[in-house]
Structures are given as structure tokens and as C-alpha cells.
Image: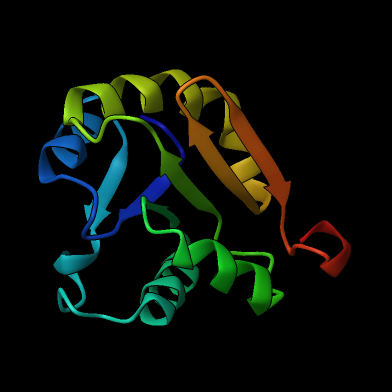
Length: 128
């Protein structure tokens, strides 16, 4: 079982969530605890309280995390050329074990097709 606890926002396919769960990840969708129209700030607050990492394709989360000045929750933003669940799962399974420590300590991570960017939280104004 992996140590990471993930909270997938509504833009992440239920098929992706199920595939990650089948690989031992503790992952739930935001709609399991919040309404489908919950504000991004509510999702971040839930993740912070529950000790989960937010998994999203929504770029608004990055700005909110940067402006919040909090060290947690960690954030994974997907910027992949395909949102197909099998492509997303394959990339996440390749990257998550490598960035687990950073996510546990508080980081904003952007995953592209061929690049992973890690920014330690809280993000300093000079880093923006």
C-alpha cells in the first residue's frame, strides 16, 4: 500500500481513480465528500484537514496554493496531451513513486508528458 492519500477533483475520470485504487493508492473523488460544484478553496481545505494530496487538471488550484502561503496540501496538476484514463494512469504510476517524499513534505507538482516540475510549498513570492 502506498503512503500517499489522494483527493481527485471532478476533472479526473472515475476510471483513473479506480485504476489507481487497484494499484494500492488511497484515492477518493471530491464528490465523495463535497458537492460537484464545490469551490476550489473548499477542496483545498478538505485536503488539508484530511491530509490528502489534490490531484487535478484545473490550473486554478496552482494559483490558490501559491497565494495561500500554506505548506499543505500538496498539489499534483496534470498537463498531459491526453486525458484518456489509461494514459493518465500510466504517467501517474511512473511519477508518483518518484515524488512521494516531496508530496508528503508539501509540494506543488506539475506533470507533463515528458517533464515533472516540483515546487516546494509554501511558494515564495520570488518563485512565482
